[in-house]
Image 1 (cartoon, helix red, strand yellow):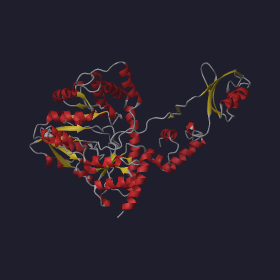
Image 2 (spheres, chains in turn brown, blue):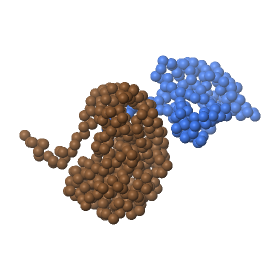
Image 3 (cartoon, rainbow over the protein chains, first blue to last red):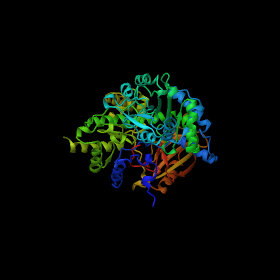
Image 4 (tube, rainbow over the protein chains, first blue to last red):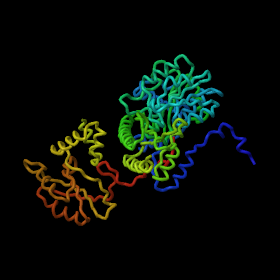
Length: 390
Length: 162
């Protein structure tokens, strides 16, 4: 009998399984639960994009594409990044990946050597830490705080940098907090990094979903930063294409060349149907983005108002489709709150500590749901608050 | 206030409350109410309908589309006939068309026979009507931008934290 525990990779074995999974499993056995936990758009992929995928299938375009992705798509991405974010990337500097996630993995594996430290502002999306460990790196969380609107500050960054720091992850607009970085915040980060060899993995998957007066600013567009930045983005959130599994990384050519090798041997090439659909999204999708953003914004305002009226201290999120209220005034931990909420009111939200310890005291609520769904959720939340008022 | 946007919002969902419209348009509920009144007075907004799938109710409904070929009246063209036809409650929609026929009438009744008799007794004998062509609707898939056929619900996973 093989002793699996002690013969598999220790790094892989020791990746923390999610404690949350357990209580979602309990919730799944209840039949009247409604959820505000999902991190993917409720919209279906716009029809013209789906149709482009269908037509490619009808035409038998079902073969591997070049490793880096269809040239046509990479050119379309290059044009899109310049049109929407004033970024300059040649088609050769772009690799089409299997979702943003694979892009993050390829970037980390390209840069990180055993012992290298990777700085991760938290709360943050759950994949940076385990992917860093798998690459032999050491994840170093940087706590961001509600009073800074969950932005990464230059001071916190400076404090976290050591001679071993290889990479800074910059996950903005942020999941789970909805925080965005303003130009002056990015400039301050850039000033800290300018004379170092530290790279930046700028995860801008939510770049199209911002709601403030100023649109998203890419870190790569800050003076002098493009040379050290690997930009990760994708189609999932902005075009409601989660199931197509398609994203991309853009970086200076010497980096792209190496990332392409990691991608080539891990993946070969990204799904061809998805790539043909994505060309349509890049070329004719601006209107879809605008329509979905308007809808998300409407829900965002509705939910923010509703949560504040119920007494939840909630900072105004200006990006992504999450809101991150504090629940500690009810005298419960994040997990306690979520567990009770699901048991008593059949409403599922995600405890903030799922996104790093600094998320404790908060919960993540997704507004990728219809207004009617959100109204019902607020109704349940109101009863819950009444029952637990201290 | 973006008046066009107000109309777009109401066309998509006439049930939006003044508070919701105020949020969406960034203007006061008073101003929005006044603008809606103005639209109603100017007959820009003519009514507010619910989209109902009668197939899912006990009410039996038969819908037919009638193509009319018409001899226009001197001086009035097609208007004289059209303005007579609009008076019938059975007539739900009425359009003057380009192409192979002149007037297109959408008629609703309780039974096939009722609709057929309406066409035979009321429409066909009217002065100026040269011919009628009646097409019964079998299934309504989409009407006024609203999809009627059953689609899948939310197929996303119930829970996730990614």
